[in-house]
Image (cartoon, rainbow, N blue to C red):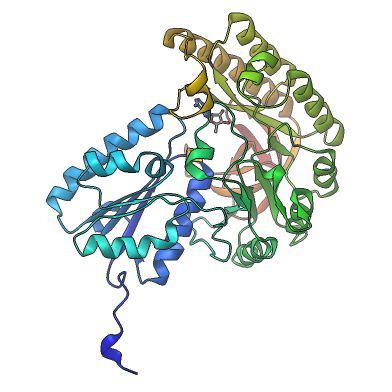
Length: 447
Ligand code: 5AD
Ligand code: SF4
């Protein structure tokens, strides 16, 4: 063999640092990128200062998410002027959406790679090291990074996200994701099960199966309830969660599967977005308020102890005071445990941006959002108060933020409980009784 012709891998001697913005899927993507880079010899930098390659894994979901990244790019461009050898890359949704503009307006950026282009990152870094710029924002109909086991960046080693599908076909009229992440595709079940088994063997005790709409998972004969059942069978000591469910697709079979396995967590994230059927129609959500409430009733029948959380958008196109009031009444009627709440942010290229006026004034959006947040705080507090005196099993995740003498864990319902440290370690299951609460956390004692 002619050793002279074997080029050393581009990563040898180089360290990489990734900053992740946006959703849980981006967290997995960053871990997948780390795994891809490791094959080419890249090491992991503990901080920005020791990195040869800095990647920002970006989000486009709202204008504010992108604005943060433009600002961060300015800071990193300044850093790069002091460290000319540093390679700076933008990856993820904003890279996909705004590649041309980024290349034109930010000369400090060496690499631009979209969510389906991560296998080419080592090559793109090679181009950057050679003095060029590497750009790949091609979307794929097949890429699922199926066989790649992500390098976990969270060192606690208790809970991991596992991507089971990519992309989205729903085209909610406000949402940029189908444009930045492309068409929906499911990952081969065998590779998912293998990854989860490896995580369990490495000491992980919780996995969250991720997709934009996990209920439409489909690979050969395997649908989502079947996949969930197989994952839960790996071990009774493994907790299984999933996100996100689309209300139009959440089936009774899924609820039966959950109810039959005690290690599938009693928590369902079911984004309503609005409580008004007319707004839901404009959002192209393809369900009505009545349908949504019927699904909530089905969840309660199957699992009376399930926690239900949601996403709400305030001030969507044409939203009237009456329609907003319907959102508040839906929230009360469901009694959500938890919610992510946002002001509508128009995204270029979406159906709403093309065909509807973003006509709710910003001040009105803010006022409506504040009402929604205030109501949710009340609902969360009420829900937490109901838990005082009750017993739960928690999975310990780490030290409490407030006190070194305490640890925190989550209930099956995904609520955080803080207890005395004792000799509990991350990954332990502990039975607790809840003694007190705020709207955000529960306090408990071991029983
Ligand atoms: N404006 C505001 N919120 C949005 N979301 C998605 N797109 C937008 C937008 N254009 C919210 C939805 C979604 C969550 C991930 O982000 O509530 O469920
Ligand atoms: Fe995740 Fe959506 Fe943000 Fe992309 S745009 S990172 S899919 S939240």
